[in-house]
Amino acid sequence: MSVRTRIVAVITLVAAIGLVSVGATVYLVERAVSLEAIEDRLQDNLDSARFIVRQGPGEGTGTWPSADEALRAVVQRMSPDDNTGALGIVDGRAVLRSGVDLDLDLTSAPGFVAHVSAEVTGTDPLIGTYAEEGVVWRYLAAPIAVVGGDAATGGEEVIFTMAYDVSAELAEINGTAQAYLVAAGIALLVIAAVATIVSTRLLRPLRRMRETAERVSAQSLSERLPVQGRDDVSELASTMNDMLDRLDGALDSQRQLLSDVGHELKTPITIVRGNLEVMDADDPDDVRETQALAIDELERMDRLVQDLSAAAALHGPSPVTPARVDAGELVQQIVRKAHGIEGADVSAGPVADVVARVDPGRITQAMLQLAQNGVTHGRGRIEIGSRVVDETLELWVRDHGPGVPDAEKAVVFDRFHRGNTAQAGSGLGLNIVQVIARAHGGSVRVDDAPGGGALFVISLPLTETPQPVDLVIPPRPPLPDPRPATLTTTSGGA
Image 1 (cartoon, helix red, strand yellow):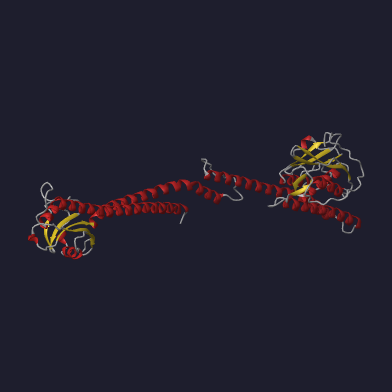
Image 2 (cartoon, rainbow, N blue to C red; image 1 turned 180 degrees about the horizontal axis):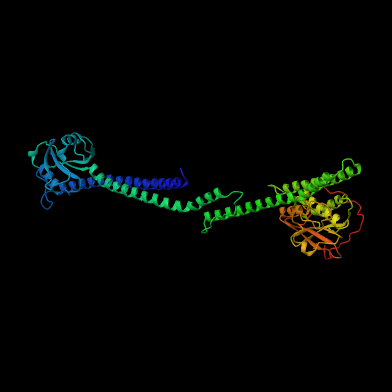
């Protein structure tokens, strides 16, 4: 079944259960009230009969001359009610009826008089049930005896009996119950219709989302869902639009990457192919020169592939694994490792002694990439340090090269951007640094260093109390620094 059908079915079923529960409860309560009312009315008529017999004839003086006279008075004076009947029984025979037409004829069930006569023993009244011959009657049977009356009646058994037709009494509320069932059925139809209309309107945006998702493909991501209202469905549409924007951006980035890689690989392939085509196989010198050129271009392509692999790893589901790290010790280790860069003249600047949540491996990779960039473009002399600015930890690398022109500062971290085309490189190094910084929730920038050169700064948010505790990197004794620190905390760049 469709979602709309299930929603309508559930709403209708719940409403039906509620209506049936309420109706059944009310019916049972009313039924119990009706049966209790029959008992109360029978008891009231018994009290009235006793009062009449005790009062006697006339103004209440004297006694009844006979039990028959008392029976006649009781039958004639009883208060008629709906679905009731009254009868006088003498020696097992129905001999007296009410002068008023009653709803129930007690002689219509031939066995009723005999049943009452058999049930009554002595002078105690009886309230019982007669459920035979297709009828259900609740009856009162009260023997009448007059002390000191006319002996003409001898030892006759005189009984006043009154009965209520239980089925007729309950039929009144049964009619009400039937009317309730009809009304409940109409209400369920209305509920189902309203639920259908409402669910159709609520699910229409979801249907549009499904249709849009069916149309969206890698070649067409421009379509977006309409956002209407401020409910959960509109929020879902906004979320899906954001997802489509991210997918569109990812596909554009992928296309751009493929285009850039194709462009970067086209040049070395063209160079190698061109030199191989014009190479003189009989000239050993020409063969050696061509071989050296081909190896150099292949190494450049190898570096490009490695950088692409490193960049792809940073776009995975878990590019960084932050841990609580002593940032001062981390910078000191980066300085030690930077000494291993060919042509590097490394010195340590001021170091902030704080604890930060970072991925030490990725931060080391980014800082060493900046150090390699400084050695390549900054004449080999670099300084490495860190500082705390407000709630931010800044790790920096300074070189003493020509610096970065203002026009290139905004694009120097773009993929495949090369500030100096005379230098070898894939153009991915600084882009990888930017990806690592963003994965930590930070950023990277380049400033002009005081006195010349470039100052590359990685800004990372501080989330830990600035205390060197719970270290991840074990401390090591510092190596001798070949040069004194050339930067101070009061200099413009650091």
